[in-house]
Structure formats: C-alpha cells, structure tokens
Length: 141
Length: 115
Image (cartoon, rainbow over the protein chains, first blue to last red):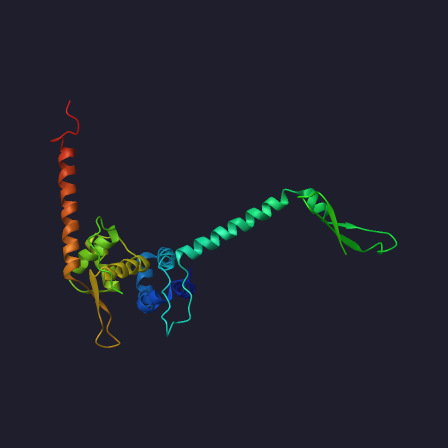
C-alpha cells in the first residue's frame, strides 16, 4: 500500500473515533503514523486503529446520555445502550411480523384481483380485503 | 471526568507494559511505543490505537496524567501518578507470587495431588 493511500485511510479511520476521544488524542495519533508505519507496517497499524475505534464507539455508546439541565441543555444525542437495545428489539419485531405476513400466501394473492364487468373497466383493478377473523370479504373501490 | 477506581487486577498486558515504562520516566506517545518495544526486546509492539485506548483508561483511573506541553512544538508527556505506582506494585506482586508458585509446581517440589 502506498504511503499516501495508507495515510488517507488512517485519517478516515481516525474520523470513526468518538469526537471527545478524537479531540483529545487525534492530533497525536496522526503525528505518529509515519513512525508507527515504518516500525510495524501499515496494515498492522490500520487494523489496530480500526479495532480501537470500534472499541471506543462501543464504550461511548454504553455511557448513559446526560440528563438535560432545567435552563440550559446542549442539543445533541448520544444514544445509550438501552436505546440501542430498544431499537434492535423493535427491528426484530418488525422483521418477524413481515415474516409472519409472508406465511399467508393466499391472503396476499387475493388482496387484489382483476375485475371486469360493466361497472368497472376490464383493465382496472379493485381491491378486496380478506378479514381473517370473520372470514368475510369486503370490497374497497 | 476522572473516575478513581480501585486496583483492578489483573491488568491487561498492554496496560502493564505502559505503566512499567512510565515508571522509569515521563514519555510522550511514540516514546511509550518505543520503550515498550525496547523493554520486551521487540516481542511486544503496541499500535497507536492500543496505546491511546489504554492511556485514556489509565488517565480516567487516575494512574497516569498528562503534562501539558510548554510550547506548541513540544509533545505532550505522560507521567505515572502515585496511585499508578501503587497499582503497578500490586500487579507486579501478584505476578511475582504467580511465577514463584508455578515455578515450584513445575519443579515438582509441591505436587498437586499427593499419591
């Protein structure tokens, strides 16, 4: 890997660190890149920094969000672990519900059906909704 | 935010090495990497990510503190604190016990099961 590409990549990876960490150590980490690269090789250095950035992100995400002050609070959002878990659970439920829907192919097939006749044109479709509770059909135009 | 904590033992190898080299002298970031490599005869090499992960944690625990550079050209130095020295001494003592005990077992002086 050429020097300029690895340096660009290194800079990009440094951007992945949480902002407070980057502000505290970012310049120092950038300044030592050339020395580390020549001593350890660019791949090892990049892998080390990438792993470290992931660790720091996880660390910062696990810190609870600061409570807002009554008169002043900074506009910002730092998701804590509970929020991430809530979003993950919501996502799983959403995917599971979509999967359950797919298990009823007859309902999907009957959801719309082409309809001819005098009242509606031959190319038009009309929606039919099937109600699983009552087993009855309802017609929506 | 400084979180002073009790001595968490065992320390990670990287943290132990960093504390060990800072016990000798104050060092800047790359100086720590070089000193760790020299102290271990090149067997242990820590990258910048590992170094600053550990430095941040050690600073939060109050075991290491940074010395602000006098001018912009100077590099920031890191120094072992008194509680850092205590933590290092505690860990070295623990390792010393472990080495002595294991050496005894290996030499067959104190077999685990009496037959």
